[in-house]
Image (cartoon, rainbow, N blue to C red; front, side, top):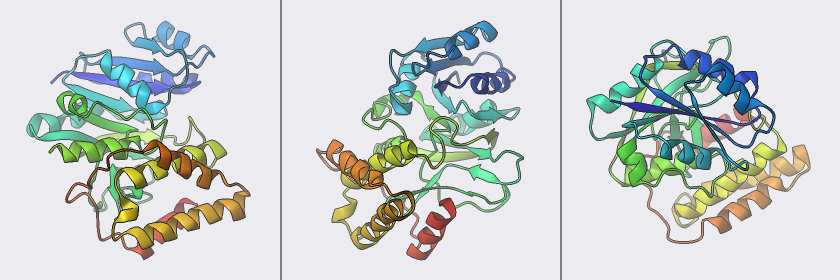
Length: 306
């Protein structure tokens, strides 16, 4: 199976170089594409100078994660598309492990790898699990890599592999989502098309986290809020039995923004996302939601993430 590795970057400097250093140690023959979101700080030139075999695609403006991935994927023709965040340094054997489920199962359309926090003391994420409101959680977050994970809904875009046939069938990432939620939306649409998700426990890397947007910043709250409003409308959550729980948690998040950060950004971003999702609603694929994530457990996770 041939693969195209896509790395999206923006003003990353040495960060993307460290990422590419580790990717260069993987099996030969895989092509790597770096999509630069108009960094204008020498990032693209630095990649070209140090990694002449890597194809650099410079976008004229910062279009966000999903659109940049689509541009990178369109530039290749590998049977698989492997995504690696520019702040992830993968382990030896990463690519081989990521592709193994796609080789083994022709109905597998997407694969989740595992990222560890710096120091490798616990898991950063191992794909995504969803509750009944389509709130997304990193599987095994803060747990040991040997712990039993929850139900896999789809991979996280930070470390993922997609069968190109599946990715193309779904028309890739929805470009209305600049960042956050685009991996959830794509995974749901792939499942609706009949593709399965798998995980690859041996495909590991260390994730710095929040390097591009910044963890807990106003920009992060804006992008996450937009994505949340988009998903709530596109998949009809507020017209489902999950309505009371969804409203409660949205009020908590918006209220926290007002009380802690003195901002209405989470509310205003949700409204914009809701408006952007106008059009036909999509059903939630069967067996995607993990009903074991109760409201109490969701609240615990929400508090843990701050």
